[in-house]
Amino acid sequence: MRRLFPVTDETPAQAFGGGERGAAGADREWSLAELAAAYAYPAQRPWLRGNMVSSLDGAAQHDGHSQPISSATDMRIFGTLRALADVVVVGAETVRQEGYRPARARAEFAAAREAAGQGPAPAIAVVTASLDLDFSLPLFASPLVPTLILTGAAAAPEKVAAAEKAGARVVVAGEGMGVDPERAVRALAALGHHRLLTEGGPRLLGQLIAAEVLDELCLTLSPTLTAGSAQRVAGGPSVAVPRRFELVSLLEEDGFLFGRYRRP
Image (cartoon, rainbow, N blue to C red; front, side):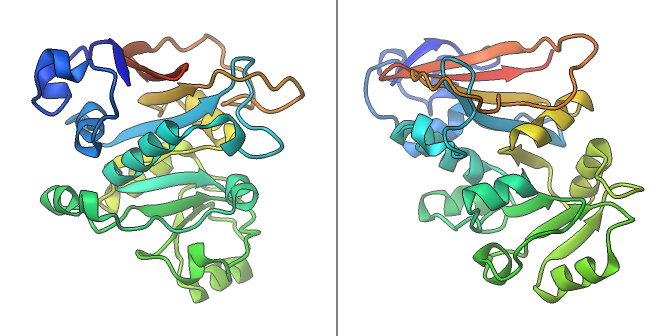
C-alpha cells in the first residue's frame, strides 16, 4: 500500500505507528496497528464517520451487494474501522440485503479497545421505522453486545416488544415513525457511544448528509465499472448546496484508492 497524500494533522511517523518516513510510504502490506493509527478518531466527540465503497461509475453495489466491488485490503480497512468504533449504525435495508451479523471481538484490537475504555466489540445500531426485521438472525439472537434498534416514538408497540424480547435494546430517536439523525447521534452519545461508524446503506447515508451530522467519509474508489442502475453511496433528496469536505489522506493499492474526507 502506498500513501499518496499525508495525514494533515499529524506527522507521518505519528500517523503510521511511529515508523520511519520511508518505511511508512513503502509498497507493502501495512500492519493492523498502522491502519488503526492512520484511521484514529479525532478527540472531538461524538464523531460520526461513514465508510462506503464505490465503483468508477458511481455504483455502491453490484447485484445488491458491495462485495463484488470490494477487495481484500478494503475489507481489512473495513474491519479496522469497526474495531475503532463504539457503535456501527446501519440501515434496516442493508441489514436485510447484506445479511448483517454481529460485530466480533478481534484479539488484535483487544488491548487497544480496553485501553480506550471500549467493550470487546462495537454494538450494531439498526435504524428502522417499521422494525420489520427477522429477530431470529444472529445479529439479534447471539450478539457479543446487545444490538440497538433506533426508531421513532410512533413505532408499533408489538414490534418494539418483539425486538426487546429478542434481546435488542430499543432507543427512541424521533417523534414520529422515523428517526431524526441529529437526535440519533445524541442518543447514542448518551449511551456512551462517541466513536460512531455508519456503513450505510445509501438511503441512510443520504439522510445523515442532509441532516449535516456526518463528520467524515472514508470512501474506497474501486477500479471497476458496473453500468446498470445500482445506487450511489448516498441517496435520497438532494441537498440545497453541495457539502464540501476536505481530503485528509489518500492511500492506494492495486488500483484501489482509499480516501478519507472530513468536513471543514
